[in-house]
Image 1 (cartoon, rainbow, N blue to C red):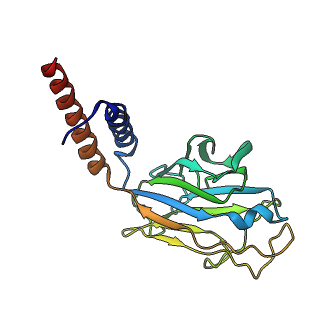
Image 2 (cartoon, rainbow, N blue to C red):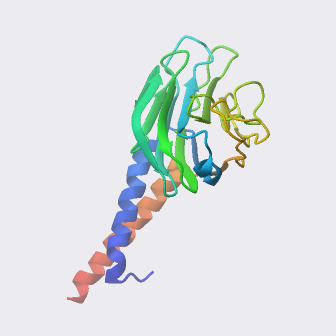
Length: 228
């Protein structure tokens, strides 16, 4: 492959980004890119809204065996605002990175945001099994101004948009918002489509990409020197 001088900064940046991601995700089992159309929130009277993430310990002991790392938030013209809130093992903010660890029975993070046309973020989730029969659970929801979940079609009363049970075969379950039910904060029901999710290549794949990029960079530099 022939590389021009104009490609050198891009090659370097990509290699560094891939290597950094590999370092942060090396112990993770699930890596997903999540996206959601949030345009209906922009005109809703139930605002302001909050993004809510939970990682709850199925064993109920807070054994700290799983964690969720949330990165790369894109608010589609909106923005994260205000302070962060939560309970149990949580840290960070929507402006950068959020981390949850199941060091308590219930671990939650939530923060206000101004809705834009869309929302996207990445989730890196470990998948260690509990000794008990009840798995740990990761969930994502949107809260209205009363801090109640926007009604969704998820089972039970969870009103989540996304759920992952960390069992022997964890899968991502997504649910649309139920626009026929008014939010607790009042106003008309909010019809949101279920989030979409895309599996991110495994960390080993990123390692191969990063290595190939760095190798190409070395070859490029060597050829430049030989041509002088």
